[in-house]
Length: 163
Image 1: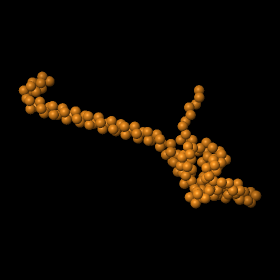
Image 2: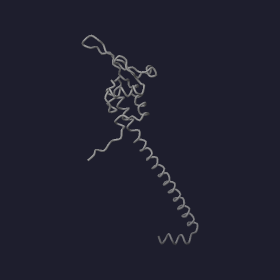
Image 3: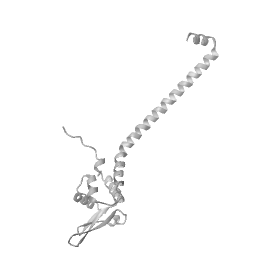
Image 4: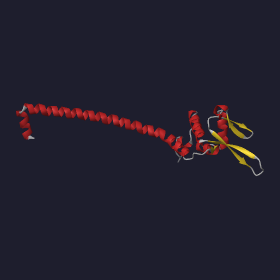
């Protein structure tokens, strides 16, 4: 240090170089701090986005695990409903109506590929039509009900157990 101080006192050109170098370092440090602050804000935003979208992504993953049409009972369970209550809810929203003990979609939804009818033969020789929901129909129900404020259980806020 003493040698440097002596050098600085004698050599004003060296002094100017060091001051310029110090100023450049300081500008670079400020620039890096600003970039770091922006990256931290972006990371916080990304974490918030993941927290919001994770339940939906998880629900979609669960649906896609089963590419076949499923009975309404399975979808109803996703929402914490019985099949009877869920069917009544869909009827209330004018998605489906009952005909002779079988649910059918209103015409607005009938040709969208949301359902598939399975025929079950009984021991008495009669047949019963049973409507099942395709994965496309399941996504439709999810989007429709979410707009109405009805979420599957996996997306519902968890209630803390009372102690």
